Length: 205
Image (tube, rainbow, N blue to C red):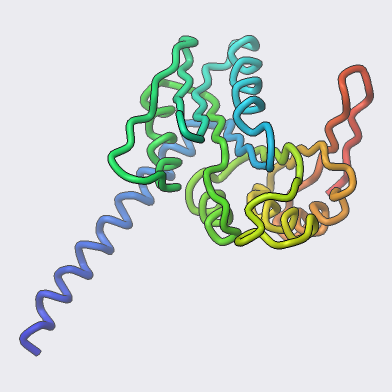
């Protein structure tokens, strides 16, 4: 019993902090109508940069973040800044990115997926970014220790970032049926990206 009061106080503080974080996230999402989550085995950083550049060219103020050994934040004025980390990379950076975008007055945010584990990919999308558009660049053999030994298993892992009631864009035609099945569960639709000069094919949801 002597420990009950301190434990209750700690629990109350944790709950309060969680509520504050949730409200902050919700406000950021409401202020940023275009939220794009870029996943895939290869090319995520390049695609993130290309989408950010295209949005800026279209007159949409956008903030983006690439990951990797030299993570960068790309700002609406065309400049970029290094992400300084005091510890190892953590998917909570995606919440920080939303706040950066909100403070910068961005109307769009483009986030390169940081997570590898399937459960963390789901958490990053559902509990943090809440994307309106998802992108899966490609599916290749990588991180088999957590994503699975086969390409279908890896594709299923990446499907955890399909946005609820949003749109998934992918160039992986062979995995469209798998993505479509997962998209139907969360009210999303799948669009197959085509090579330049070819027609894009929408896959109805």
